Image 1 (cartoon, rainbow, N blue to C red):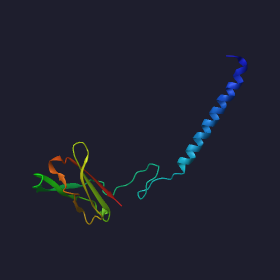
Image 2: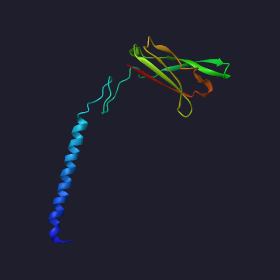
Image 3: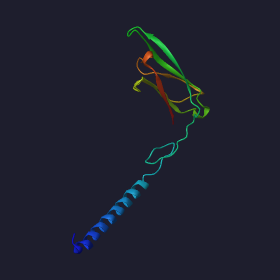
Image 4: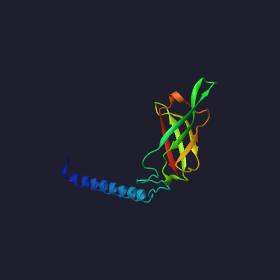
Length: 139
């Protein structure tokens, strides 16, 4: 490399570094303006969102025989042990199979007391396929 090209190369490197710093400043400023999240809204930030029920719930399944399919189906689930702080909030429940796929779901618009009966959508789920459930209390 020729000694006379060294000053030009340094200038190009300096210009590239300054451009990179400017670009990071713009990205940082735009990310900072997105706002945070709270328990009532979501945004582009991270924060702990408190739960109204911290000790979990218990599920009791109601199964009924479906003569058309020849199977027992889970038609509703009683969710109990709900903390009193969750009263008035919505409850969504999804029944899952061994792969985690959704089999059926149901909702309760407003929890009353410490338990809620959730009717499953459609004809329910094949009772022998249900291996898990996901409950979400929101509102």
